[in-house]
Image 1: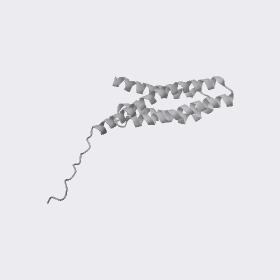
Image 2: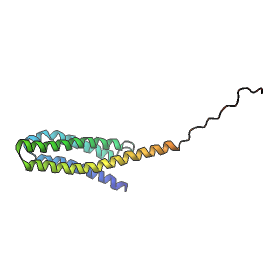
Image 3: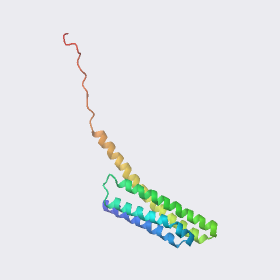
Image 4: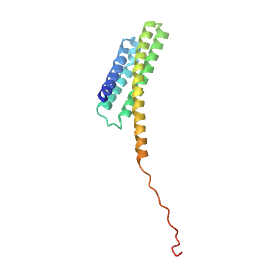
Length: 149
């Protein structure tokens, strides 16, 4: 089961990168502007793959959080590119293409966000269990200081 989740995370990361690369088919003006977003998404995908394959269990959620933030930026840029395509060029086809890519990215982003929540809440529950199992020291009250009585 653990390996399936690992492979699913890698597959989703690569799929989102592929969808982000599909913005190359948008018109030339947006192609230049989205190039930086594609490079950022490529870097985030590499970070996410490293987090899945090599990171210590304690740090995996931080790598995934980095990927989630960059993918959210990529999603918003793709939505904006579709809006600009619709308003500037009156191209319904270009807007539909950008927005359909954004819908697929949003669905995959939601799956990974649920995985992130599962990782962080699971870690928080484990920490709480560890804290609850540690016994607090019991202090005995001192007897009276007057020993002559």
